[in-house]
Image (tube, rainbow, N blue to C red; front, top):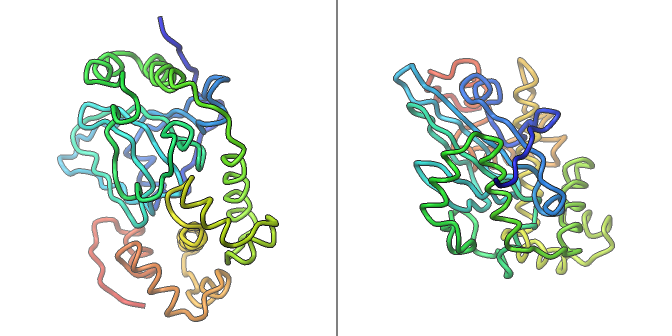
Amino acid sequence: MGTVLQKSASGYKSLGQMDPAGFEHHIAFDTYQPPDGLTSFVLHFWTIRWHNTTGQPYISEQVMHRPYVDVFVSHQESGIQCTYRNRRDYEAADSGRIIGARFHPGAFHAFRNGSLAGLHNGTIALQDIFADADQAFVERTLSLDDAAAVGALADLLQARNPQDDPQIAIVSRIIEAIEKDGMQTVKEVAQWSGMSERWLQLLFQQYVGIGIKWQLQRNKLLQAASSIRAYDAPDWADIAYELGYSSQQHFISDFKRVLGKTPAQYKRELRNPASSVRDEV
């Protein structure tokens, strides 16, 4: 029998989920702690399930991603999902189940043995990295209960024998500092880390697949979305100022370019998901 993993003690809240309440209502989401040999590489294993009886598909809308890579298997599709620059929508129709592993930022570099530059906005076939992950592996894994299925996925990853890489820990520390301390420019990150701006750009391109400027902007938009959800009547000018935008219009333009809607539209649709509001702020 393969590895069987236990659920995490505490629930994991995805900061990239743009409608957390809707997601929790429609989707059953659980996380599992990685075994000792994978803790340096895997943030957690995860499962999601849904059973839609309304006849209308639920659209889970996200600011995708934070800088993560996910390996996943399901009956509909299996693969390795890399970081997405903009919003990505997921449709939960009928019933379904997905088993996955989320890597620490930069950690998938240890499995691919090469730069992640250029791999964003796409999905890689499982067998491109894991030769044993054929359709038979997918079917066997999905025949198991959730704990055993994530264990089978853990065994697949451990078979690659990934080697520790100090650069992965550096990437994680930088991203954690950006998200907690609210740094807004590459210059600030360089001063905090003691590294040159050029070195930081190259590190993120190689290990994350996208430049550090993207990470800084993504953090701004995640903070903006969180503020919009938190207040009944958000002050757009105050949000723009707190996030370091030169003007309210610059903030609105950035938000709309990524989400495809203005902050006001986003707020209205959270209140009434069925609406198709077209107001501009």
